[in-house]
Length: 291
Length: 331
Image (cartoon, rainbow over all chains, first blue to last red; front, side, top):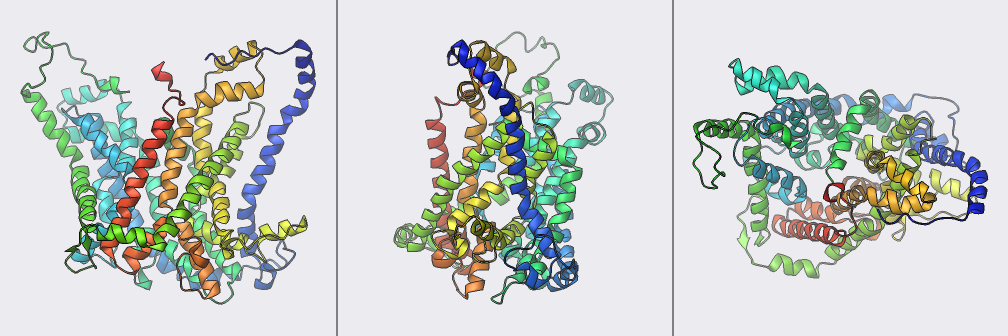
């Protein structure tokens, strides 16, 4: 840290002090403006969903709907077959959450708390697979699933999650490593099997990390677009993410309906985010710190 | 953290004080542990072999073949790679992707750094609220974000152009104008860089306060502190964001797909990459080749070029940054 050696003449420091008062409130003001800009698209999405079609394309734009109308919502839900699409999303999202939690806990335990020769090398392989772009494996996977007759079934979207996800294995391993060894050794003394230790000791202690993994998996699946686009080609199998697209036609777009549908699809995630904000931030921070 | 797992039992007399020979046979306990460990990681082992290793090798093989789905691949050597060099859509998609990588990623990272620096200010109240706002665009589904921005950037009725016209600027056609479509995607990228903000913020909060105090004693102003304390101390996070952002831009798909489809639906255009393929990203072109035309051999060649490009770009960035990134642990 050699770089901080500029000294300033004293009179300059005096002027700076006077300015500093004004300067102190500048960051907050800039942030409020920026936050408003970032929020505006959301506000626009919500207010548009409450407008009539002519008002949604009015010029100059109308910010507050007049009249307020919820008409767009039932129409939007019907047009995108919301109930069916929601069912389709949940059919693969829920089993994926279960599969990810089970498989990643087992694998992370194997890497963090069982001492076997070579485990660090194998773990590097786990990390390396995170770098592999999905596109490289998509084509052969599609071929495999086609041969298995899994196209137009939910299996390609569910089965892989039962075989571990590298990022979540990494996340859980980091967490498991922080569990005091004494606890595990005490359980081993009592003759508990490793599986029993995982279920009785490690899992109860790791609830926050497991909740993070479960939520992130659920969101991943709720948002997944590429997978359903490729594997679920029949319209009746469309999940929410793909069903949102039905509003794009070559006729003029019904913006209130499209925005109403977007609000409905985005809302559960926004709610989850608000409720579980801390888990998100922690998961994310962990990613960054390994940099 | 690995220190936790170090064996705490005293060294056994049989193993003695001997330096661990590198080719010793495993003791019974170790063999048992090896079995248990492998058993626990077996889900990943199966997944790795079946869903990563085999597909990666298979796609390398396919890339040297002419392969339509459900037919036998025919070996054609390097033909796919040769064709790729002559394919205008390949070059178009590469150019579009490079635009996002070289313009969008640095811009998004710069804006995110700015926001994080503002948030890291002690005098700013309501940190949690601000953080929520900036992260919100990351939370909503990519499809919804794409559709929302088609609306916001609509040339005539969109909020952005209507706002611009208030200050007397005639806004561009954005996604409907080939030269403005990519800047439109960049706007969307900047808007949804909230995860980058969070990563910077946690890095900033980890900077030792004493460094700032020392700098102040030496009479350093805000700029000097930023330039010579903050930036060096968070340089690992900057590098991380550049690499991860670059990789993501190379693979970007959903938003560009949704927007390009929306635009072409509105203009009765049959192409998949927006007007004059101005939004045909690498991932879009790859999807098109593999899953619309089912040219699995050619698609695999595209995928491998992508993989090699990502690897090279990452290596170059790591190399270039080697003397510019400061790791505390290396002091």
